[in-house]
Amino acid sequence: MTGIIEQINVSPGGIPKRPIPEALLTREGIRSDAWAHPRIHGGRDKAVLLMCAEVIEELRQQGYPVYPGALGENFTVRGIDHRQLRSGQRFRAGEAVIQLTTVREPCATLDVYSPSLKAAIYDPAVRAGDSSSPRWARSGMYAFVVEPGIVRSKDIIALMDAAV
Picture 1 (tube, rainbow, N blue to C red):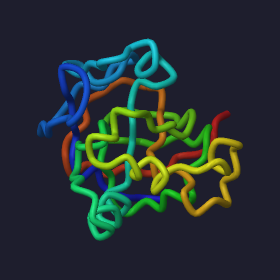
Picture 2: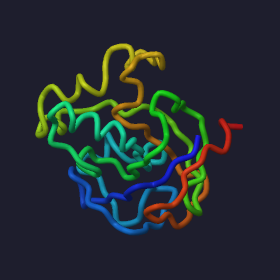
Picture 3: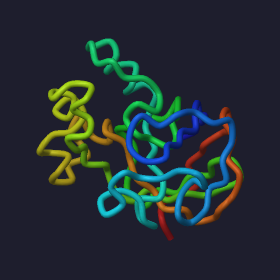
Picture 4: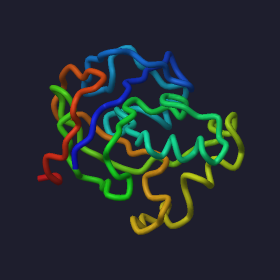
């Protein structure tokens, strides 16, 4: 699996996150990024949130007023099939390496776009860990940072391997 990092997004906390051209990815996440609810988001296992641009486009076609960064993702990626994402996969992203940890469970913060958005991107099968759900990873995947480094918009993001 190979794609591109279409956009890198940060905020002082909360949504939306706004685009920046490049970022220093540290073990704690993107330097200059923050979370409104650090007990729920962030931390080493949720240092970065990755979301597929194709999902955002599908949601827009369904009438949701979303755009890259609106859903709180740090990396908006294109060319990677969300249905193929799995915990433990390692990706090279620019100079950094990340490892996927878990599917993001959407919260009420996303209701600003529509209360039905959560059901469009997440369902009980995903909550149970069923990767055959059509909604698998539509809400994004969290990752921890294996190797810090600089990441730029338009960098390649490529699957390296599953966790060792």
